[in-house]
Length: 513
Image (cartoon, rainbow, N blue to C red):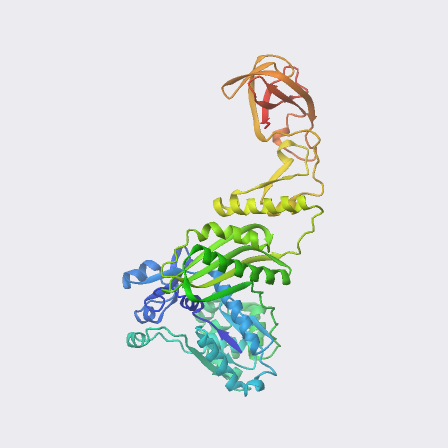
């Protein structure tokens, strides 16, 4: 059984209470350097708008058109939920692209009263969930998929039909291909049902418009012109070769929902609801040995409006206190309006996490404090702006470290990382020439960046040779000597010079803390 969900993005928005989704509405996506319509409501279709039309052209025809950009992540989550839901019909359920499912109902249909009763029940259940679907049942997986997507009429409704059904209720259409009738059923379908778009265009130019036109051409000639993969796909559709459904493990869902008998509006009440949800989600994460990296709190109000609050975490975590602490500043800015009646917490990004046993309480406290600090900074200024230093596998100053995201620091540290027993500057700079005003080794006085400095104390030299196995133009001049110089002006600088130079030029290579 193939289940095609042609309006999945629109159905998701309707289920979430998106304002205007039941009227003149469309979901858009960026495609071919333009914003185009992807999924349209019945009212939009009745006005002559079509998928693929540019947003500018659509607004010219319908100035009142409301649009929302697609969210592939949330659409994928809804599809995963549909896959889990279909587990009630068969254990062999898998996703089919971004907008479909395929179910192997072999040995299951009799439990529901037969195939005809089963497909109607699946269709009614999906419609009850607010998801429009086209369902087809056939002898082969490929045939069911082709019929569901290309063999069920989906003509745009007339304007009167759209006005008569303003609610935009989800609908489901079904078709059963008789046993042994695959060849006849798919023969009238367009070649797009079995060919990639590029090959389908070529076929139509050759006069091959429907699949039946391919029956009279030997497989060898089709393979020579369109590739062996196409012939194998056609054979699978017609049942010449096996095309089983590979059961796909449904994605784990780490979420919790709290429906309130009476709307709430006080920050303390909302915080208590979040605390309960966080405890439930963290318990499920622990049972699955996972940790959350990002979470979303969906808030539904009594006036049918909604809002979503999102947070990120530097490391996978299932600590309720840490997660709740990151939501707390956002709850203070939440507008309850007429009151909040539903709260839902979802761990949108998770990773395997078994937890770590720390040797001392102080070590665990330090780790927890660091995770809280990085999470707070990341949620405030962006996680891409929070970086950690890791040691590199080189003794050269510019290659001796790298900047990575905090949660990647442990994994990014090379096993061959060079351990320095000498201090390195806090701020390393490209070699900048210093003007020597009083010679010495290192110079007793010099100017740098428009300022004069006098050496008070110096430590060195530390001789650093280039890596002979690298062709690095920055080290073409050879070995350098480095000095740590404490100046009378207070700065502590890292000075460098060429080791073999008799009249050395001096450079500033870094600034110590």
